[in-house]
Length: 255
Image 1: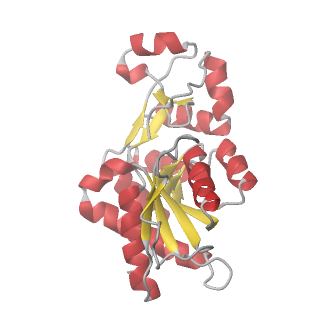
Image 2: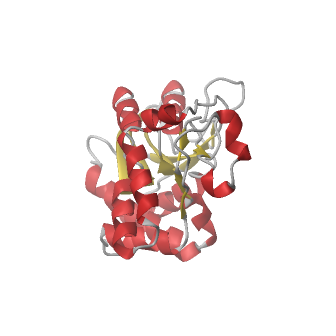
């Protein structure tokens, strides 16, 4: 398969109606959120932070040709960036829930491209640390994934990168290596960039949220005011919510 440009992949997501941007009031407290009309309620992300928009990449699993195409394109990007000598993809680890299907599809595509087995596992409870449950399913007593093997943590989108970092920690704690993570959509959130750097993780992505908003603007898929509001959030995500009187919630929300 040949690589396509960012506009083509971004437009595919936009035409699938996967992008929702809301007009959030300039002042609103946590307690007032649910009293607002739905079109004015901020989204609560898995990290517990608030924002004006959400891209439902995981909803594209119902569109098989679309999700396959996006993961095939991401697989090509992964092979451009990773090196068989310095940072090989020995296995793929999908974060529950949204990262599981893209990760499985990636493992299949990478097997074809690399001509070797690329095992798949999934990581549970990556949204928070702690607990006694098995965190990584499919890895125990697996002769195809030896100790020290390098895993690629996969999610369908990455906003604040909390689950990505927690997933990498889970694999490292179990005796494996993680140098890279991969996602279809990276918000390019400055808080995520800091977190990934602190964890020593390089993010591989198909396109960023700023890329997607540029395509939305060009093709006029959303009101300009909504696009501008989402861009304001991306400049300073924590400042955006603090300015409005919103406070992060420990339990988190959308994943």
